[in-house]
Amino acid sequence: MTRLRIWVSYGQFYATDGGFDTPLLGDAFYGQTNGLCGARTGRSLFFITGLHTGWVPVEVQILDAPPPLEPEWEDAVEVSMQLTGTELIVQGWGADGHTIAVPGPGPYRVRYCAAGMDAGRDQDHTVGDEPAPDRYRIQCWPATDIAPDTILRTTSENAAYWHGAVGAIAAPADPAVIRTPTPTPMMARITTATAASVTAGSEPVWLPTPPSWVELLTLMVHGPDPEPAVRGTIRTEQGLVRIWRDGDRYRIEDPGGTVLLIVDDRTRWQFDGDHPLPLAMPRRAFGDGGTALFARRRPESFLGDDFTRPAGPIGTAWFLGRLAWTVELASPPRKPHPMQLVVDAETGLILQRRIDGSGIAEEWVEFVAGDPLDPEMVTWTGPTRSAADDVDDSNDIDAARRLEWFARHVSAEPIRVELDLEVVVHDIDEATGAFEATLGAAGIGMLARRLRSDEPWDLPWSQVQSRWRTERWDWALTVLYDRPTGRSVTALQQQLGDR
Image (cartoon, rainbow, N blue to C red):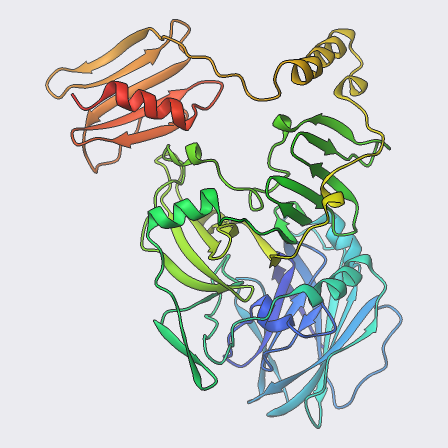
């Protein structure tokens, strides 16, 4: 028996035949019964763990025959794979592989056993050499042929969830036609299509030319018309969440089916496990529900320099079996690494968002578009509590009641006020016309310009919300305590002109 410490991230690691590519989730699990060990490609395995990120203990046994299933293992599945040589490579996520010797080429049966998956899911990650609460064993022995996968034992809630989720995985792109690249950090889901056309069977499949940045930006911000309902599962830094979305109405649940959030056209209901009643608030209080992937970015969010401009050409990819566009967004001066996006070609929703240099990522692991959504799923008719019910201090209770009254009787929408701001100029370069200035007597914003240049522009502000360029000038704007709308920035640009 070989004992390994395997690095997992996003709850996954792999085993492959020699130098065969590590698999994508869709390629590995589509059409299977079990959701713990994906073997669809035939020469690679995709293992699911309870722990999201950290080191997990993995035992590997090469046997002559199938062993008895020991009672210590809470969950167990079996799959088949084909080996072409004498090496099985067990590889962590974005890590080097461990070579395990096998008797020779041919079909093998593989049993994947797990213990402590629920505890690993609940802990989420380990720090340093902290031991993981979950552990795993891979048992491999020669077989006479390739047999279907099977579930031997299911005890944990996490395993039951993945067994149920595998049926929703969309059909992948044919891995024999569009090959999966060896994954680099944060790229375990993407198959890149580099040819203008590929062949599926005997019929050519023509890949469309990627859109321009303006076309892609329009798709991301506005989406198709009509916009299809979507559902699926998103893996965030905090774990998995299940999503249903129909236009601007949402429902979010945890993997076990507990409702976390419902948002309809007017109201947001926040469900808290510590309270029997959901908290009802005006929709305007709704944030992003813990992930930005199921909602569209507002147009004004692309006005600044915070990951708003492409750093290279738009690419074509397959993600979860769907045609997608890839783009890398340039980082602002205060941030060291660019952002990578995978955008669904049909809906314009972001399927994966990564910052490879920082190890940050969130992504859809299941995505279905176009299925009608029951309207009852995105509303709540039961009893609720108000914000005032959650506040003990009498002043805060009174403030919460006044806010709720204002939303009901005056406006639940943000208030728009036009201001004339005094300009206090601090620095002037009379030779070039560059300047830096404070806006408003109370210093609620900053404005700056310089001669148009491609050189970096580092301003002494904590954040630049909007940058734009004219034929002569580069401009920068920041408003403290809030973000200017796209309409207000456009009006300011027209006022300042290019003189």
